[in-house]
Length: 89
Image (cartoon, rainbow, N blue to C red; front, side, top):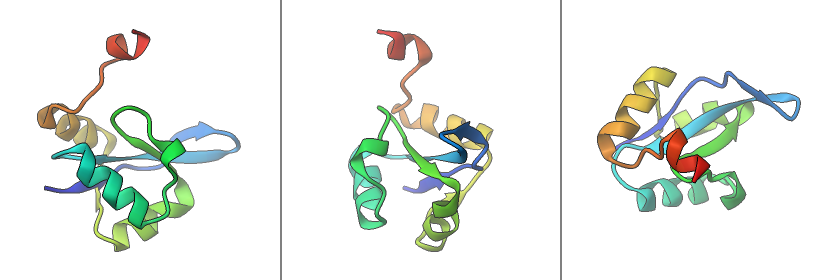
């Protein structure tokens, strides 16, 4: 079981954002996020959006830094991935 964070490359609201996911279950992800001051409003169905400045602190706390491709592959393999089609409803 691992918490993964990718590179902050997604621009929004004047800053860059990364994604924080679990490769196992959402309870693990929510617990990690809460323990490291990631607000619940940052959760987006299968991941948290986290600002660039938090990434080093999350890695120091045990999140494994991976590429975006590695993160998506791990999320798909976990069965937690919400597809674009599912997001559209």
